[in-house]
Length: 368
Image (tube, rainbow, N blue to C red):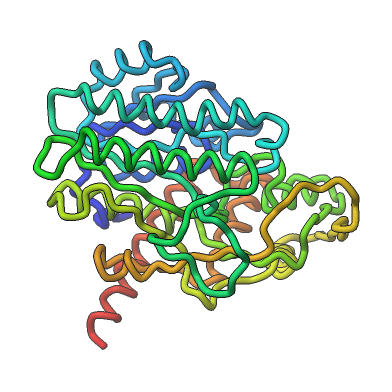
């Protein structure tokens, strides 16, 4: 298998916060596959049960550290010891509905935790590039039909969205106050959302809800079947994060800039359409609409991103079509529940396939 899409990371000392989570574990899988020297920092061993990080055996492939990013002294000591060349900050309380039940935890982790990472970077004595991952939900969502651009207004109706908007303000403050262009620290902001793929077992997310129920021959309850989202496979935004990091390493031209990473605009579909697509790959799958249940918290009906900036300034574009995203996701879970292949092998094979498709489609695009 070839993994040369981001071969420049080979041998680089890379810190990934939140490495045991869904996106973090896929990022670690990709980075180790291309030969990076990865150190992970996370609060807990496994945020979910099962855990993609544990099932893929990633603990044995990296330096695995446990600490709370809200504990500045311990975090700063760890970062100074690690001496990272590149940082991907993904550690977060990432669930909208949980943020209603735990707003203080959400604000503390997502806002203060981000400030702590930036303060650790400020105290480094060597050059370092950092990509701070926030969310598409950092925008003040007014339910319009066109995609949000990076210069649109930030906001957030729920604690999670507000925390991500606040985190971006913290980043902007540090860039303007402490990290000038020409300095040793370079920072980029990455916004993405509605990421799906194998190995996600978080609560209140439609894909893991589906496969948890279908594996037990149960109906899955769908809260918002008509809600439309720009679904994308987890490897798409991760490719964007890696692309942004390399661009920052090469030049400080994009220092302090935010970037959206999402699918093309015609790849949006409703929750109902997504569930129906996933069901096509499962032997017995059914669902029921529970959208009329009282007491549900606010969730946006429509939210999509304009990714023109990433295209023109990073030469990044999504690779997968929606049907391919659905197929890769469903097949990962099929292999997991069938137990016919190791999680590490399935994950690595999907990264290799994504790498192949990206290079093939980029080559065809350049020939047009």
